[in-house]
Length: 132
Image (tube, rainbow, N blue to C red; front, side, top):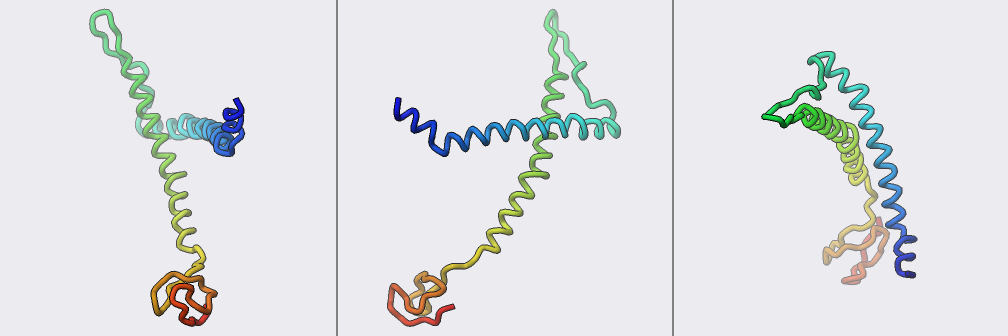
């Protein structure tokens, strides 16, 4: 039982729980954005985007493929919104941050080993170098 308590108190589990809660809240925001803003905008230009009334009857069975089309369209719109408004800007931010990262090491001119920028002597070959 003590191992289970340690597992629950670890930072990973708590971080995961927080991520799930925030993810669910963010999912609700994105779903509302799609349902309340994008879908009416699409219907203004392309007609009614609700396919739930579409059915196919074979004998006694009724296939409501319109609901599937609604769900599929909603998924594609949510995926596009997530990509263009979250993933793409975050990726650009992350790449820009990596480029601007501070350089802490440099190469030794004699042995080409990696040494700290402020070093005055190479720790590998003991050659004196000018600190940067």
